[in-house]
Length: 342
Image (cartoon, rainbow, N blue to C red; front, top):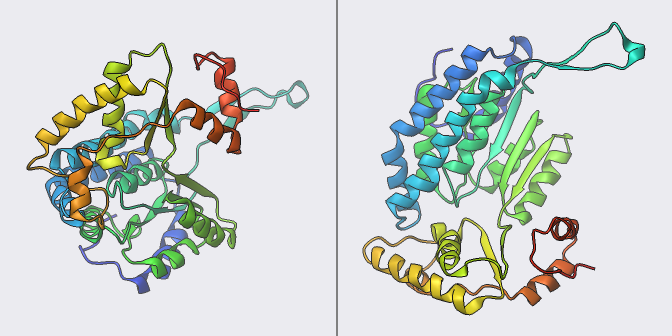
């Protein structure tokens, strides 16, 4: 299928494009290995070829975002995911045999991986390339057609993405639609065969409500939950630097939270990293979000990250509905001392 001419997908084209993709997904044979491989290679070329433009667009959207951070967390990570799909594609597509019960003999059972059809992807602003392309690559590897709705808070990055993808994909394979909350509502109300959303819990509830009207299968990735536990057996001085590095990635957008009762040593390691970061970023500041004031950005490199005490962490665990994981963690000796989760 020949790629479409590079043009902006308008709101009015959304229903027509969806219906066209849906019709083709039902009328044409499932995508072959060769076609899926070709789509992933085109996706890889599109991102790699526009990497500089994407870095510049992210810097413009965020006021300024360090080029090496954009390259590491959005470009390199995205290309790595695409190549991971390429490496495992043949194995994932193979039929798998399963045993049958004795009363079903001489019958045989096989599971044949089959594309769902049309997949929708709604991505957030904080990792505007990686969180858009990574689920998109997985959907293409599974043989699906895709509609992508990137965040309106990073309009320049979304525009570069749309231009790069529309240059190598026909709209019947992949289409990008840019717009605000009204478009997002219409997008999520379409009867996709699967819908993937990454973002906040508040918006996730709205997405789930819209998808429920069509009983659309839904995957919600609601970020900000990456706890790091520091126990007495940990060599906390080097961890201070590593932990602060994780929490400081993209100025906190990686979602790391550290819980430690070894505060003095943690601060010592974190301070070493903070000084290095401050010195390195005198002329290369990053920012937290497209709307954070500049004075807050400049404070970010030198402010001390305050880890929560273990007692406070235990209280939060008791109040949290998902306490089973911590019980299992203690049972498997993942924690160095008992944590009261009763």
